[in-house]
Image (cartoon, rainbow, N blue to C red; front, side, top):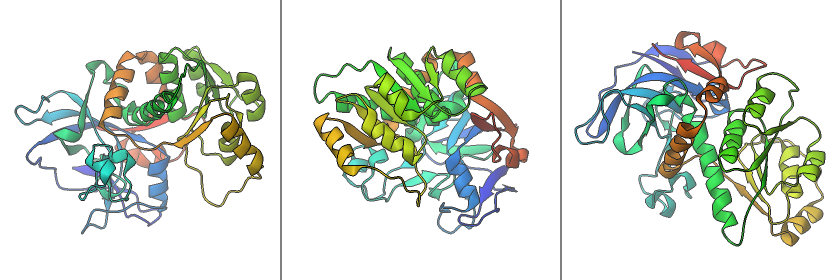
Length: 349
């Protein structure tokens, strides 16, 4: 079968190659791939920035935003031929830390976890793949065209869980949320905000095109002006920062309403500096009882919440989030961003 692979840490090594057909082991599903989401992590691995091949292999099958249909399932597994499924990305450390040992492998404390398509485990960018039933999640049949959005939705499902758990330290009744960035993570964070009945605001740069239209499609408010001015006007109770842009990160931290919660989901590049009045920032956070929390990856609980959120969403809106579908053999096009991209997906078959 064909698979999209790379030699980690080697730029321009991304290639479709023939690999052996997968053979499911005990307790594993055999899955026919339907689509694979392409994100910034995949592009960074393809550039040679990072990535780890499985032990004894030169090449890594890339891809962590999986989506497929079950071909074979073990008897009594709860899965059946024809089910729509995704595979979880992360696996706990074989010698688990406390968090991994309690099923919170997204919060691994010793770094010994592995990840499909990223770190020491082949990913899902192949025509077929296997996955342990304990790390497979079934999706509603209605999501056949948009299930590729599942993995990024798990990321924001976790972010919202963090908001709600932190808010529960005292009375907390948020009304307004600001999401910075109208990429897939930002838009899906906004979706989950509207599903919670909040007044949702989204900030990004484009003044026209898919991103503003998708925000308006949620009955949310789109902004493209100065971050500080928006923060002062909106005074959000919750900020979900999905860009990693340092200026926006610090503006979010200092501009939330009292008792505000800022969740950082975007990853900043190293070596970028911003002038910050650290004393004022510290004073604001302390005196307002604010919280800033980083959030990455997802565990099985977040996958379940994400599946519920997608099943409850408007399918036409979700379909517009998947802005471009590229055949596997044209993978280079998927890894070359275009101006109006939102979520780009590789298609199989």
